[in-house]
Length: 167
Image (cartoon, rainbow, N blue to C red; front, top):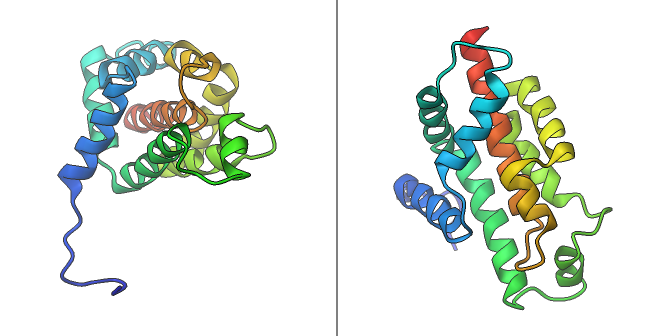
């Protein structure tokens, strides 16, 4: 296998579609995320609009750093759920072991796209787990170890983008 193949063109559209489609299969829309951003940011920026938040979600979700990490996170949940991850890692992921931390580490890379504010936002959303993030954090229907942190990271990054705009 050739590393750093100069002939390889990064599949931006396919990666974006993969993330959006996989989230939709789990019941998450970009509109869901934008509503959380809007409710959070209007406390600090009363002039922010839902449309502005929706546009920011789409923009942030096109970032390669986000797409790369999101694809890995979504696949790890899926592969674990389908029994395609070996032990002991499968049990660690299935049980969202408190000392695992890999889910938060990968998510944090997304949140930091918008600097320190993205990082602190992620800490808040990861702790509070409101709205759709809480649904995934408390549901036993699927393996959700990575998706709740992914959603928190996306919302945190978008909130960071909005905050930078109004700063």
